[in-house]
Image (cartoon, rainbow, N blue to C red):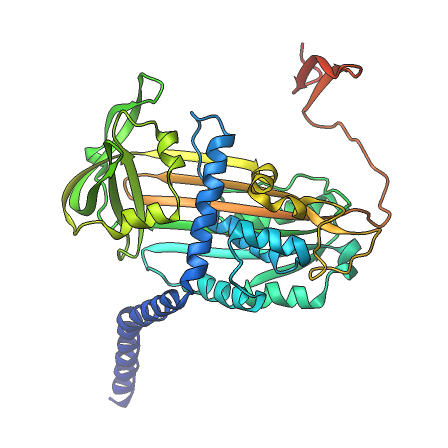
Length: 427
């Protein structure tokens, strides 16, 4: 009987523990996450939003107007913030202006980013949202990197710091493997081997999101329908349908209107906002009018929830790898890319013969939207280069894989022929 009683007590304790874990702990985690999110300085939120619209509008102007664009401005600004804390003098001023960090000291910025990144954990049990940062340092140039900088990215940006041999072809594969793991396999390649021996460091941000709609779309209601194109004509799309309580408002846009719909995920804390201008409004002209204040106005003036029929096309977009150098230079960050005049002396020990600068900023983003919800991932890589590097192994050109070639008149620069060789043995 004692054994039975003891066993019953163990089972009871386990049952109570499971109930507490299921009922109380998620609520406690939500409360902690919400409290941290509400404590983030709104000046940082405003800064990141302003930068988001700045870079998006530059991309619209830079890209073919008929192309899809999908980015994670959070990923870009977070990655650039890790570079920014290593900058100084006029480089810091230029980056602060572009990123809208003017009002923050480095200490304040680090504290707020630490809270912001932490607040995104445990946001919703029906939403997977993970943020991962890392710094990959060249083994050959590791001694240049200041310990205070390493400590800063580790402590405030929760970045893993890895020292690797940049002359090894396997290093690019390891970095890409880290990216694949942190984006749940949605993005598995962004660093091409061999790595330039003049690279000091790769700063990387990876973000992964998977959220279920609060009100899901029944696959049985999805039908092929027309999606009208801006240039005329229509495309056949899989149009999803659902009916539920949603926020939907109409706002004036000149002589026209724009519908703003809110489609929430999970527990209604994270949502997709859809801005749909009238049929005769050019979408590129419309997006060019958007900025932080306009967007906030749309959101703040949304009416209460009401029953709405929602039709939303399923879509799947892969955007990038997009090099953002020219975009960021256009916004005013050109000095950070200057091999001679960039100042990242808070990141590394520099001298007149070996200066540190931003070599490139690459971004790639993927999104899939279906009846269940949304899955998205993005990665940003800031490549920190040096103007001179330690001696490396001899360069090697091993043409042992498909390649592209041109035949060019170097007097005028005219390309006479170009080709791609997939199989040298084929006719």
